[in-house]
Image (tube, rainbow, N blue to C red; front, side, top):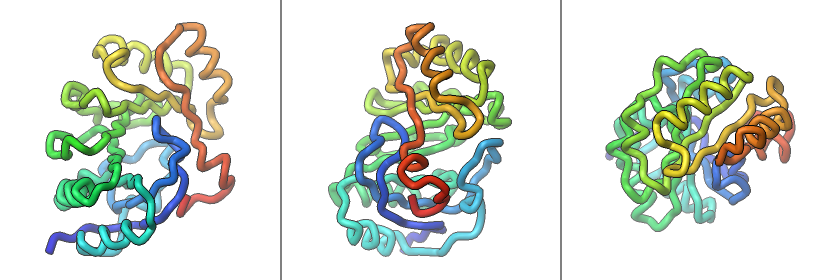
Length: 214
C-alpha cells in the first residue's frame, strides 16, 4: 500500500490563492527541497509521520469538507503524491495542490487545481524556478508570487509579462507578512494597472500568532 510522510492534517479556512475564504482540509506533507528566506512552515521541512494513502484519504473524509489542499513542505518530492491526488479527486473532493514550482507538474491529475509559486530573487531560491511548468499549467490553475520588496515586484511584473502569464492564468501577488506593507503593494498594482489579485494571508488575520493547524 502506498504511503506518505505527513506533517499534519487539519481543517481551516483557506488563507491564500483564489480559493481564499473557503473552508478547506489541509494535508501538509513533510520534506522540502528549498529554503525560502520567508518560509513560515519550517517545521514541515523534515520529519513527518508515515501514513498509508488510504489512511490519509479516510482522515480527509472525516473532516467533512468539500475542498482539500495538498501542501508542504514540497508535496511533489514524495513519489506517492500523484496517487493521493488521484484518489482525492476520484472521491469527489475539490483538490488543490500547492507546489514551490521547482519540480515537474506533468503527473498532477488534470482535475487538480495547481497553485504554483514563482520564487523571486528575494526568496533566495529564484534559481530553482522550473519555467517549463508555466507552459504546463491549465487555465484553471494559478501562479502565486510572494513579494518582499519593490525589486521583487518589478521582477514579477516583468516575468509575468514576458512569459505570457497575464490574461492566461490566474495570478496572485502576496506581500511577505511583516516585511512589505500590503497597501504599498496595492499602490504598485494600481499604478501599473496590473491584472492580478492582491493576496494577504487570511489565516494570519483570523488566527494571529498561531503557526500550526491554521
